[in-house]
Length: 146
Image (cartoon, rainbow, N blue to C red; front, side):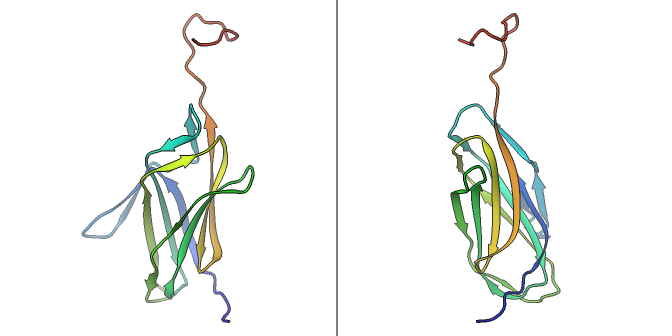
C-alpha cells in the first residue's frame, strides 16, 4: 500500500451555480453562500453548485462528495465523480459541479466533505435555517397567522 499524499486544496465553495466558459474553461462561481432559508422541511433545493481548486497532486484519482448533517452526523447524500486524471503535480486544477436537485431534511448545520481516493481532503459547512412566515401588518406577535 502506498502512502496517501494529500493535495493542497486552494478553494472549496458552496454556491448557487458554477458556469464554465466553453472557450477559456474559466469558471464563474455564482451566488456563494453560507446560509439557506426554507419555510418548510424537507426542503427541495433546486440548484446548488460546488467549486474546488487543488494542486500538488497528479495521476488518476477518484473524488467523492458527501453531504452530512452535522447535528446528527447523518449522511444526506453522496456524489461519486468520474475518475479524474491530473497530469502534472505543479498544475492548478479547478472543478465545478452543479447539483440539479437536493433534498434538505431539516434545519441545521450541514457540511460537504470532499474525498480523494477515500481520504478526506476538504470540508465546507453551511447553515440551513427555518424562515419565519411574513408578519401581517397590525397583527400582534402572539396571534397565529391564518
